[in-house]
Length: 157
Image (cartoon, rainbow, N blue to C red):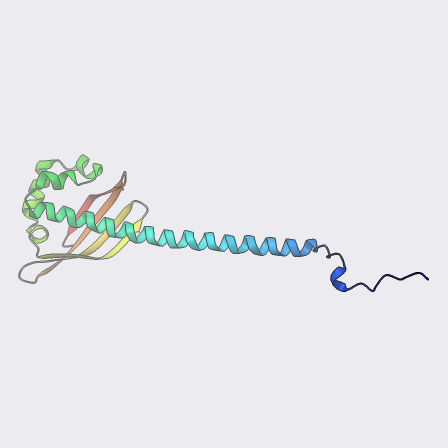
C-alpha cells in the first residue's frame, strides 16, 4: 500500500510573487510624499528667510539713525550704500543731517510698513518728536554682500 503524502497546509505554499503594480504604486506614493516634504521645507525656509531679511533691513535703518543720534556722522555715512555715496559726499550728508532734526532727534522711529524684493527693502513709518509730532519717513535699504545699507531716506513725504 502506498502512502499518500499528508494534505498540505496553505502555509506550506510558496509565497506569491508581489505584483509589479504594487511596487509601482508604492514607489509613486513614496516619491510623492518625499516631494511634498521637500516642497514644504522649501516654503517654510523661504518664509523664514523673508522674515529675517525684513528684520535685518529694519535693523540697518535703526542702526543708521542711532549712529547719527550719537554724532557718529562719518560712521553713519559709512553705513550707506555705494550708490548713495557716489551721489552724496560726506559734507553734503552732514548738511542733510543738520537739516533733518525731525528724524535724527526723534524720540522714536517706527518702521511698520516693510516690503522686501530680493536685495532691496522699502521701510515706511514715522518719526515721533519729543513733543509728539509725527513725521512720515521712508528708508530704502539694499543688501550689499550680505550687509544691509541705507540707499535713500525720505522725510515728510
